[in-house]
Length: 301
Image 1 (cartoon, rainbow, N blue to C red):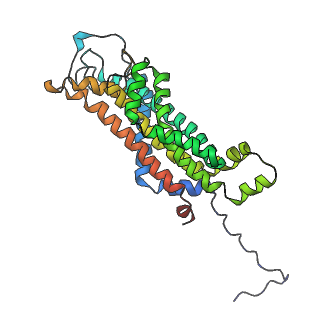
Image 2: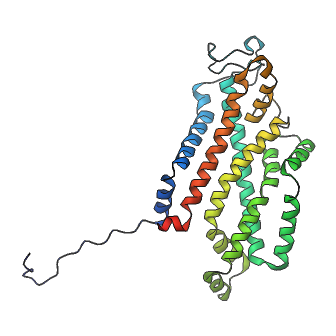
């Protein structure tokens, strides 16, 4: 047994390691989800393909070249073959992916933003305001979303900004109902009551307390909204309501390729179809991982 110190002072004790912060705990839970990590890798790969790929494999996606039409995969200079109009399929896949991802991301985030604020206001104020706002939401939800999208898309000329607004005008309904439920629970918290007693108004309560308290739900919902928006882009394009040529997206490529299934031109269908499946699955896997990461019970474990 060691002798006590002659100076009479107690031996130094190493301080306990600091507990990891909320961000580190969230990242730790997210990285334990293998499907979420796989989704993140797939999404980064698709982004690199669509935005860095054209720099390494430049192609002409504006002018047709019928002398190069319908070449099979592996043809000289055309790794994935060509379309019926002579466009390089790999280049078309990359440029079409830019349209699908940009419209899907913008529409999904816009829908989440508007729906979040709408639902937070309805849930916090309650009463007749909540009843009126939610009846509007319920009435809109009663109409099939695809039907609304088709009707609006036939009235206006599709373009990137128009598609973003059309899809966002339908997609905000689900996050509005979801965040309204969160707001109903958060408005009864002690810190919200304390803010009211100190003279805080409704705007401060919504933007400084309700929305920050629901940030986890908002982020998770945003990933699912983006995935749904990308599918909506594909739906509209498959029905012929896409951005006019020579622009393209994965849905319009899939629609054009269906015409040539009888002659065995499989390369016009599989690449865009696979890309849609991968990007939607990636966002859903990421959303599942974020949902676990923001779960309080998992973060405490």
